[in-house]
Amino acid sequence: MGKYVSVRGWLECDENTVNEVKKIRDDFTASSNQGLLDEDKLALYQSGWTFPDRQMNWTAYVFYGADIREYHLDFMKKQLSEMANIQDITGYFLIDDHDGDYHLCWQIYENKVFESEQENIVFNK
Image (tube, rainbow, N blue to C red):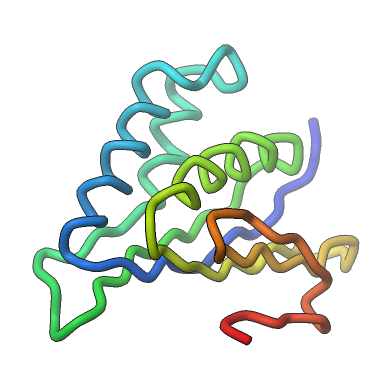
């Protein structure tokens, strides 16, 4: 059956890169799943993305929040790794569970996803 983990965080973009993030999300929803999730579960997990209607000032924030099955973390990390390849994008995601087994942070900068324990967060250093 598996347990659930909470994944929540954001990407910091500009007006142009928000559309690139949407495209990657849409591509993963349409074809990049490669059998990792059934269609209903995929649609449910992808609905956790929230995009701004318009950019306010100089930064656009794209948020994600959902409780997903532990064994689908690889799908989320793979999707974020694709998004990390977008020029000048940064991000910060917390992953944990109610049992205390997970206290992870995925930080996106320098076109990579860096995983650390939450107590070792070095985002935007």
